[in-house]
Structures are given as C-alpha cells and as structure tokens.
Length: 121
Image: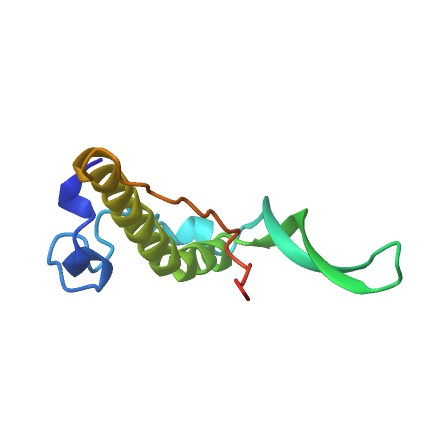
C-alpha cells in the first residue's frame, strides 16, 4: 500500500499535498456545470420484509442531476472515503503484525463484524 497518502495528516486535511483534495482533479469547465446527466449510485431504501417489519436496503438507483451537483456530491463523499481507507490500511497492518510477531503457541482471535453490527455479550 502506498504509505505516502495513508498518513494521518492526509486524512485530517493537514497535508499540503493532499489534505486540500488537490490530487482529485475537477472539471472546471463551466460549459458542463448546468448540463443534466444520468448517473447511478446506491441509496438506502425502506422496504417491508416478509415478516412485515421495515428494513433498509441499498438499491442501485439512477440519478439525474447537473454535472455541478454530481461534483458536489462526490466532493462530499471524499472525506468519508479517505477515513475508511486509512482505517482499513491501519487495521490490515496491525493484523499482519499480529500474525508475524506473536510467539509460537500464541492464539490470535479474528472476529469480523459487518460495519453496522454491534457486539453484545
């Protein structure tokens, strides 16, 4: 993994190179800003389960917005993506270190929860 862009200073927006999102090129051509385009994204939708209870599921939906609105949406998602990537990279490094550095005879437990799952003993 590229350590250069997974530093905490990058994630917190303190890095002069990528903290200001300058590595993500943007189309600044005003001819495109008001053009309506179609694009797809997953949105959470309320559904009624077979047991009658409500639940939320991600559904791929078609969006029709201006290019300017799409750009704003993407920019709003980048911070969450950077944090997710940083956390995933850090956890992968920690797991690798555990597997490689624990002495023979040690036991390493791996409990992998879905992101929205809570552990209640």
